[in-house]
Image (cartoon, rainbow, N blue to C red; front, side, top):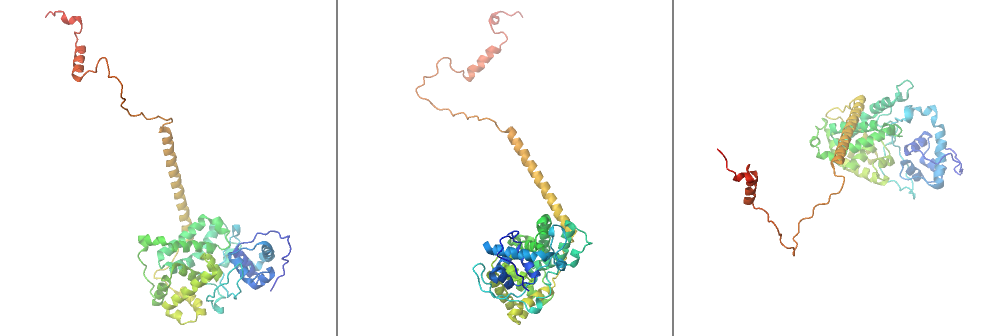
Length: 417
């Protein structure tokens, strides 16, 4: 299915492009491939893929042609058949789950985007169902009768994504407490910045990035609570899988989780790990090789089926303790209480600083007082003339004479006793 768009017209309504996730969503909603979009715009398929991942942006005539093409695709986007991929929450909240990756044909390298490396692709039968690690968004989110509002939308997002994120962070860290805390911290930050998250094209990806960053932070190694490892899973196969995943470097571990566990394609995995597509592909190949050396089941299957097997193993893993995130209302209330405490602390500290500043301003000198110069000996000055200073003995005698009650001529008058 192709659509003819006049890319030479200079009267486009606007040259602003939608977000990268929205570009891909519009193309997939129209059932178009990268080759068809590239043929309509006049560029290569690799360039279109680079535009969708956000690594490069079109310029000049290519930008105008791409903007006109996306505007034509967005015109029928409000049709009823697309209601299952968006929600009717306020501020355009979208709760669409992560789109499973599809096999992309190899394209020649272009000047704008490097060619993608050969990466293990999932089999054709595993691309159709949704990712088990991140379940599909419930259809009830867009029901007309559900309660609307920021709190209801946040609770719906939390109930949809929190269990899967808790499982993913547990596979990344191997610690149940840290995994649950990372998920709670991510959703607390999402609630504090809800206007930004609600208008984000991929709110689940926003929260997932925050949870991954906190769970994989190197500062946790200095905390006493995280120095002791959790109890391993009861199943020996699960213990081998978890030990193999934790033995990978942090970047390889995150790449494997996004590509094999979540189900993102290679460009989206590279964008979320802040790496180029070739780098993400190389990390994925090395990670699969390391996992195949440690997991016997993975070494028995061909490379093209390793992603599907890893995904099944991640889904079947059972931790030693259940991963049960707290209710959404508790997380939201805890975040609000924390914000109130921080606000009160900031106001108290501001009051203390203002009081100290006022006291200093009142007690500090308001003019300059030069210090007294130390005494210096001067030569050629004559000695002191005139009455000399009294000694201590003479001073006492002088005071005694002055203190006598019969001082003066009365002293020589005889007294009659």
